[in-house]
Image (cartoon, rainbow, N blue to C red; front, side, top):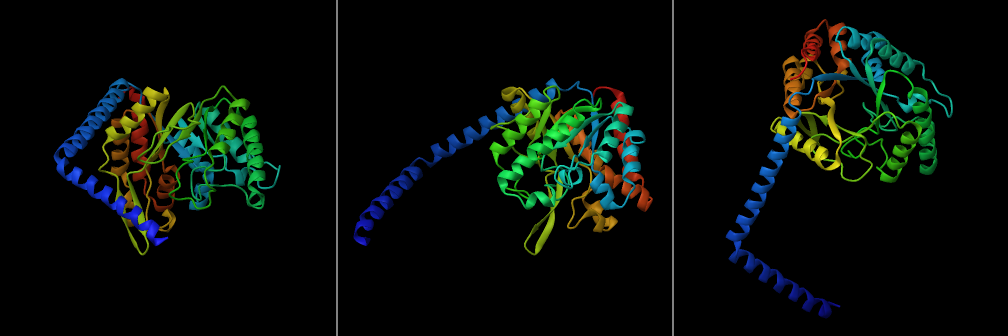
Length: 368
């Protein structure tokens, strides 16, 4: 075998040497071609970004907020008071709500919609518009919120139960006057965290998408992409595309940890992504999750106030909103409504809350 392999290996090495000599002989030309391609892409990307920003320069600023009853309870605040304060005091007109599977169907076929009914009805009374999240994967740790009883089933039966759950939720709220849109499976392709989530299967996502569309074709269905990068290429894409944008986070590599900043990423990069989606997919884009709370080395409730302020503060919230506006997206949902309320009510620190109130007040000023 060695005698048979040696000539092949020898010929392969000769080919590598010839390629290397050719590359060295033409290295200047190759370098110029690479630089030209990079320059062409850069000009194209900036042009698309400028087109997108110019097109949306007069769009009305529409701040929204995400709210998780589960997370408010984790922080130990009155979740109902927290929610109504976001609508009444902070003045948000757009809110993203969660239909966590483990809370909604704690036992097979036994649904508990009372708390979500209340949230939807409170929004309807105030003319607030709701994006309702659907599916196994929804915002807030541990990302996938399926009930324990589902874990005992085979994967095929889990998918069957998931479709039943979608059917129950959509049927329940499709005629609620507060409902503006659905969001299906939060950042479904993001595999960097959420170990509780099963491997992403596109066929199952298609089945979920078709199930929701068959039950309610009137309301738009949003599918989000991940932080900082990515555009939807393979379906399902959704009627709208939401972006998640986090600019500072604590990263851990083995025993080492440090704060990682995406502050070097220019706003036009996201404008470029949004422009591509609008040009080639003919879908509108918006920020469905704009970081406005800490991302530290532990759960926020376990961090000191000083540590919390390292990754989020009133000034950073203002910077985040200004960054979102530079992108050109009129709708942006801030992430952290439970934390601002927690700091205000538990630590007598209204600075974050008051900053957000100033931000939402800007929506009364009309366009940018």
